[in-house]
Image (cartoon, rainbow, N blue to C red; front, top):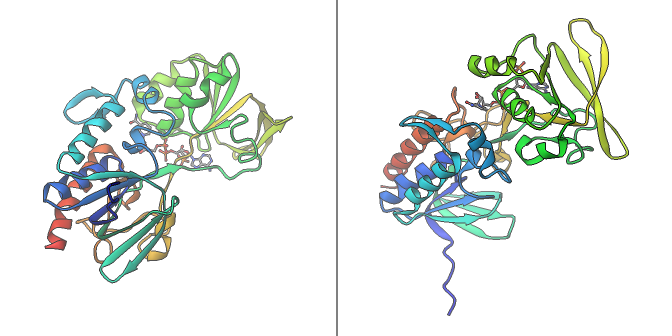
Amino acid sequence: MAEEKQTNYDVIVVGAGPAGMTAALYASRANLSVLMLDRGIYGGDFCPPGDHRGRWERRGGLHYPGFKTVQGPELAQDMYLGATQFGAQYAYGTVEKVELAGDLKQLTTDMGDVFTAKVLVIATGTQQRHMGVPGEEEYGGRGVSYCAVCDGAFFKNKHVVVVGGGDSAVEEGMYLTQLAKKVTVVVRRDQLRAQPLIQEQAKQNDKMEFIFNTQVTEVLGVDNEVVGVKTHDSKTGKDAEIQADGVFIYVGSVPMTAPFKDLGILNEQGYVKTNDLMATSLPGVFAIGDVRETPLRQIATAVGDGAIAGQQIYQYLM
Ligand code: NAP
């Protein structure tokens, strides 16, 4: 006889990144039944979809206390084993609906699965922001990309534009110089936001060019393929065009909180508001990691959030 699928838990953690896996570890170690529910593979941002190994190996490993370098997938695997050793379970599914009926939280996934728990932990993280300019969505997958490792190989010996001035734009731009013949980074301000060390490395790279004070206003294409971008120089007020075969967009991130938007716990930017104990204003609803309103988004802070939440959940349920 087929084993009946468990649908009712003490705790459901939505998102199995470092924050979610740590909360699951602490809660299950306290003998609570825990489900980690994730739309993809565990690991969150350090195992991005379609990019399970390359990105972090290429970067020489994540920086995380206690390790000189450590590869994202290996750390993710170890965290997963840590989280599941006390019985926490893991299931695939994108949460589409959240209903709070008194003390019970009910979650419905895109696959029609319904799970209930006394405690909901939101650990869904962030996703890459889109620029919102004409041509961006139209040429998605036809020259517009948000993942250099996934799509860089299509641009061997070609010219690509990278949009953004943060760590991601500069690092991914440097990665692309290994494939493309030229990488033009378009930065909207007069300076980069990336860490000084990363900036220094990029400036020494002959294949990289920076254009400052410039906003991409449109992605241009012909016959279903990107041929360049339109730009606006905020200093001179001049519009121009850059011919390019691909556009890689790294303009920051936005919280993944769509299923929680009606709960009244989000700030204006869509991040979840919590107190220092990771509790939202709703009883039994916690939020941790990058999705939370927080001044720093790192693996170290995510696991700290997860540990606090795991312990607080126990207190709440007792
Ligand atoms: P970020 O630090 O938020 O940088 C976003 C960049 O995009 C900024 O240069 C921003 O310009 C620009 N931007 C925002 N909206 C734009 C728009 N509509 N059009 C054009 N440009 C726009 O994002 P990130 O680089 O993805 O990094 C996210 C976080 O991950 C950061 O905390 C970062 O330190 C971290 N990270 C760390 C590493 C590492 O440690 N190796 C690697 C990658 C990411 P303004 O500066 O004008 O706002």
